Image (cartoon, rainbow, N blue to C red; front, top):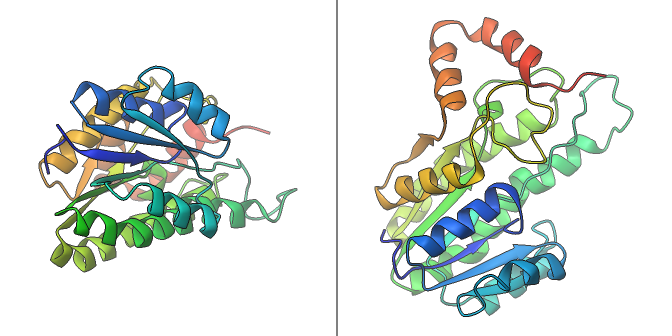
Length: 247
């Protein structure tokens, strides 16, 4: 798909990778960008940077009513960036918050599914376009101590594969981004060299524009993929040592 002139909606677009996507979309000539955030005021702050092209939207992807309202409001969308994410930093066993894994799944998997279901017909009605799912290296290798996060990203990756086949007849492409370490608040604990949020936005737009099904966006995710091919069990331990928060 063509990025210049497109209309996009970015979930979690008020900071981090989401904001990086917003900035890259504007620089690539997007006609309009709907910035979704759980707090409308946060999206409105972003809109002040380009009020002619940015439309703020109150959007919690775990709330079906807000997803439906966003799809009704943003009827001109041709690109969805499913970026909103949750990272609770909890183990599956021995956690002090048994509901953390459920919250991660609600945002990272069901949120992606809900947005894709709501916007696929919108994109199709506008002549086709794409969906970018911002995933994680923790979704191609399970990371101990990130017990809720990794399964949610594995699930979203599988959903991306399913949706790609299901939505192709509608003219809707689906790109899964495998993101490693990025300089965001969510990844503050990660000990490896980090890419910048705009680097991920740039990589994602390139991938969807070129019809790439799955794309490793940064040096860390590329290294994880290579390590996974030669030593999957050793990689899990290495990832745990370098990425998981310490208690």
